[in-house]
Image (cartoon, rainbow, N blue to C red; front, side, top):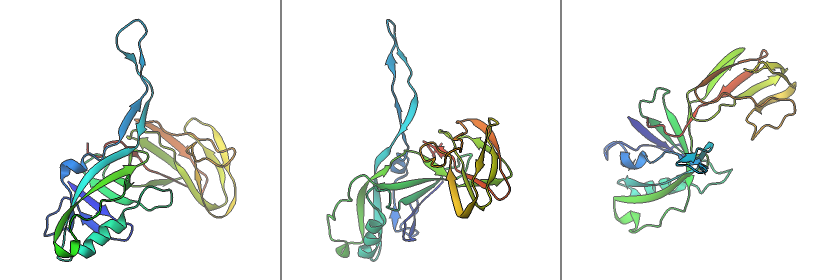
Length: 241
């Protein structure tokens, strides 16, 4: 198993390493709390026992991880660690925790921000060589992402994840007719520059483009015009199993 933390500034730390190999580490048990939450609105069964299950939705990830930071120059490492993290905003780059836990789909990635500011020092870092920093971590959608996947012409999407997959279409120049898994068709417009068309209904901004996705545990096929590439990833609530 490997768990690596990568910062927006190019630093990389093996969180399951040793003091000989990594300046920042964390207990495996704490890292395994990087799991999304399930939200379901159940309704009491009238006149009976139990409930009528509501629709399953996923809430944000929010958990606390204690990081052990050690270095011959702790002040510099402490500064790198603190500089890497930002409170959540649309424009703030995340810290990325890469999880390779032997999942059948390969590595997954948590994009993480802070839910609360990091605590101040208990001891000045220029006077010690190690410290523990407790970070309240946050991911707004509560889902880890796979490596990106891509295809052209006839594209088959297999969704082993936990939420519906909506591919993006990437191209420049001529568009053309796209056929969706249901057989519906729409036309991508011609463009003068590199363009990304998102089909997720939450982000769809072009009239006539059909927001069709592949539900969990399903397979679908798109037929694309020449020069158009489909790009997607898989999202899971728990990348540890």
